[in-house]
Length: 331
Image (cartoon, rainbow, N blue to C red; front, side, top):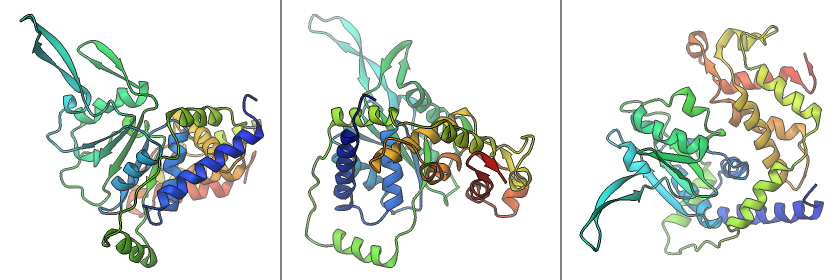
């Protein structure tokens, strides 16, 4: 192993400092912060879904400050064009009077990109993100340009306003490592939010990590050990999301239309490894797998008509899968 046990412990301590610094500004949202950091450590993109005003945008901006990452925000609207995201080539006159094309970078060329209300843009504009998210490159007029390193897209969407929205296609949903549900704050948290946001005191955030430290943390995540039985358990979880499997789980067969693909299995293992690092371990446990199963699989399962009509959610089906798929053995 390239990294020692002490290095893992030190990195875990640094990451806990990152969390503590974020909590100086963000009230509550424990799981939301954890899973967003897991996605960043696993070098993936995250989709945050929650009601308006829950601090999704503020959380992402805070994380970019604490991790010292360049940040840009794209407000998705129905009239947003792909060139508004990627940038465009413009004709400029040189000093000797000649004309030449000069590329003006769009907001996608930042290390952390906030795609705010991503489901408000048209499919054509949404697809402009696909290449950047998948291959970390952008092709403009035949010229391929590399993204910043590291590069993350953290997108938000509103689950209740359906008018004027364009649901994300399955291909784009699958590009997100995880889908995080942002909960409504408790009464105590609401009171604390009011104290912090309506008073005169301003909170200055410290930069806890830099790009090189984050890249080192990402490499440490890749080298976290995963035993064969853990790999088999993860595979069993993903296979169990398929209703057409030879021995399907009854609830999945009844309520699911489609299950997760291979990218879901990759995401499950990556996020479990990131959780292990956050907790100072260099091996993946069953608890890691179970903890990340819902964020990884909830947007990769599609309910059928009966599932939607009965009020079931993909989280309900994942609960059934976690209950019936044991490590190496299915009930």
